[in-house]
Length: 320
Length: 257
Image 1 (cartoon, helix red, strand yellow):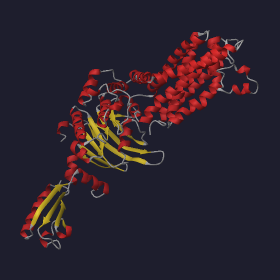
Image 2 (image 1 turned 135 degrees about the vertical axis):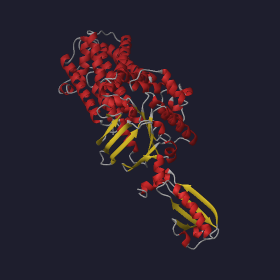
Image 3 (image 1 turned 90 degrees about the vertical axis):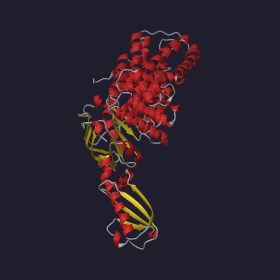
Image 4 (image 1 turned 90 degrees about the horizontal axis):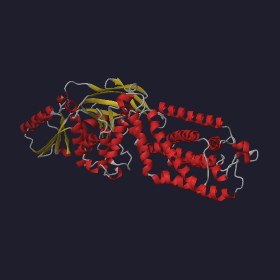
């Protein structure tokens, strides 16, 4: 998946990042995280996990209690001026001057980051985000999805190399969400490194090269998405039996199976550690064993675990 | 990247000025109309009945610096406080905080724009006043400098207010309940020499007395207090505001969590 990236180069290095708010709540507990240049990294976690605080700490909205943040190989605390100019942020909330016109607010963002006016660049960004036709509209008159695109356009106005998207598709309908995914993929293709937080596991599964799971201020796991699914994936097969069983027959004792629905459904859960590929093979063996034992069945429902299953397992400590 | 990003500062400045012109009725016309009414009522109507004027100056002309200051203090404070409070209120301040922008650019943008609006208002008010009262400016360069100084100082003060406030009510409390009464009692409409003791001594504790009299000196060459004291106190106030804002940016007070 990351073959197109070539040699890995760290663009962001976070070490021992801690944030304790004045009320005593610790939002980040010694977070260590490295982001590779050119990747899409999805940070997954429930509400209050510390995702937005982590992004805020990198972008200058939150003052870390301890720890270091290096971007592009330099300390952000020491060289914040030149480093912030290379970082973009799309916040979770639709926060902008709603009375400003689209084109002007995007140009404003470019100027705020110290770049000279470039109408052609602004036009290119607005066209890429399907906002050009709305360039003279006040932001407040746009739909929620378009407002979010305006925020993305504002974040892109200074051509950042590292872009943070905090819940980019929150409150966006399915069609627009998929459209947004395409836009984000295009950005990555143009060389922008993207870190996104999301509640939608489907989003991470669809887009991310690597996934980090954060909960209660701690990073539980960071891995290549595919590797994570292969390492922690499970296969689940539900075999509907022609006749109910009173218990697991001796012939099936070697398989990780159980009976449900009053013995009418044989449930297989296995294949952990090899991404379910072993699981599907084992399900095939299970069906042969059923046939040999003379146990008839009428249907098989088989599926691989999703990132969502892994996420839930990790949060519950089941797969940790 | 240099220590001062002029383009960023200019962008903030331009945005703030455009916001003022977008709301010209509220930002420019309303204060001009209010001040004009003061000139009509106090300057032309009541002042016309006051023989001998005040402080050796025709009464209508006497109140010009005070009324000008009344507007400058209120508008500088309100404009700057509103300018920084609104992004905090809407959440759009994230963009400013994540930009390569420091205290210098932020102040040049927000405070510079607020002070500019005050200067524009001052020019309009002085022009309007000339229709109702006959006044002169003895030291026009000093007058301009003093108006600029007061505008900048109270724009800085307003900026602090906009960062301190966490509601629209708090935003209007200081201009309405503190600045306005202090200005009215600070010699806007009268010389403090007409006050009997102990009120004259009490009035000297009002900092606005020194501001009004500083500006009045630039108009008529005389005032109730020394121009040196007025200037010194105004500069001291400006220095305190700058120091406090530097502290805000250093600690992130009410800006960064």
